[in-house]
Length: 220
Image (cartoon, rainbow, N blue to C red; front, side, top):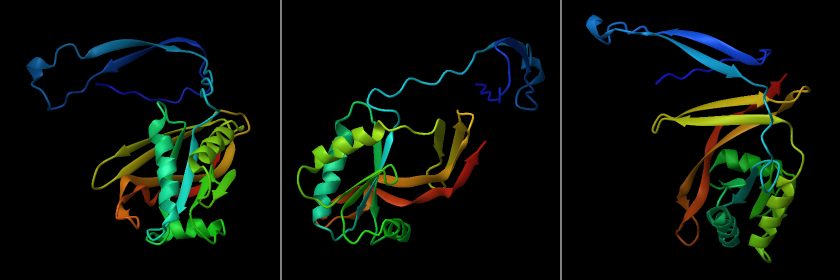
C-alpha cells in the first residue's frame, strides 16, 4: 500500500504523471525484485467546498460541566447522551468536564465563571444552558440546531488518533478562505465510559481526560 500526500497550492488543473520506483532494500531477495517501476496519472481539479451539513454548517461541540457529586447533573448528562446516540449522523459531539476530579476541567469551568453545575456550553460559548430544569433534551436539541446553523470560518480539520497506551494525536488544519484564520485549537481527549462514576455509581458519559493540544493557531 502506498499513501501519497503533497501540497498542490498554486497547481494548475489538468493531469500530471508521477514516476514511482520502489526501493526494496534488503526486504526481498534480488530475484524477486522484478518490475519495480510504475507511472501513475494524477488528475488535479479545483477544490470545491463541501456541501453544508444537512442540519447545519458544521459539527457542533458541546462541553457539559459536571461533578461526581452532582445529582441534577445525571439528568443533564443523560439528555445529552440520548441526543448523541439517537442521531443516525452525529451533527454534534460532547465531552463531560468533570471539574472535581480534573484540574484542566476546573480551569475551563472557572473561565466561564460558573457558580453551579450542570452547565452546557455550545461551541465555546455561543449558547450556554445552565441548570437541569425543564425539558433538557428539547433545549439541547434546539441549541444544537441554532448553533450549528451559524456562520463559521472556512476552516477544515482532520484528526487521527494513533496508539493505545502511548497515544499520539495527529491534527491537520487547513484554511479555505483568503483571509485565513486566527483562533484557539483545543483537542479534547475523553473516554465514552468514564473511569469516574456519578452519585448513582454509574460511569459518567464521555468523561474528559485532558487536552492533547491547547494552543493558539494562525493560518495564513
